[in-house]
Length: 209
Image (tube, rainbow, N blue to C red; front, side):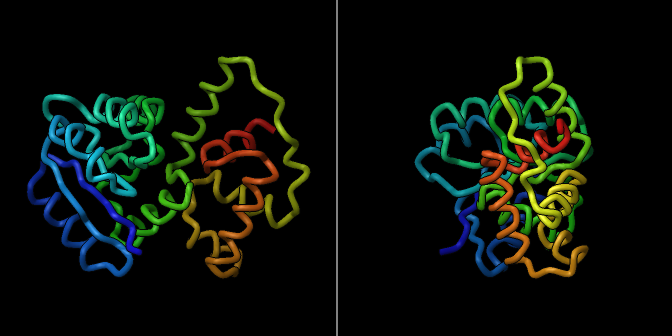
């Protein structure tokens, strides 16, 4: 089954390009697209795609509020924000509202497709800079007991270190001379040992060790 994707983007040319790229890529299908947040919030719960690519700066209702309203009625939908540049505060606000990753609009197509795949598998594609901001926010609240990262094998710690620097699964595989499937297995084991469900949580615990 292909990964179903919806697009929320007010730039008509970019929206059409993204839809074309998805529909021409094996394993992906663009099932709907919207030029404003209001239409997206109204229709996406019925369409129920696996992943939504959403512009963070939309006219009218912005991307952050769109995520908040969408996740309130359709929490199963995974949202990845698309931005022109790394606006730390807006991206963090979107993640706090329920988005699970973000990518820059200039990201090459192979990396974007890999990020969508990672998001659909439970990951959270984002850079180290944003991951650190997430960690800082966790420090403001009383921390729950954190399983020691010493429980990880040396290879698992290497994989997690590269994850914390924002590398994609494919990049980690190339860096460590492993297959993509092996990296995915390591990351699943890391999640289990650290008792986390997402890349963000795993990186946060790694940085807090």
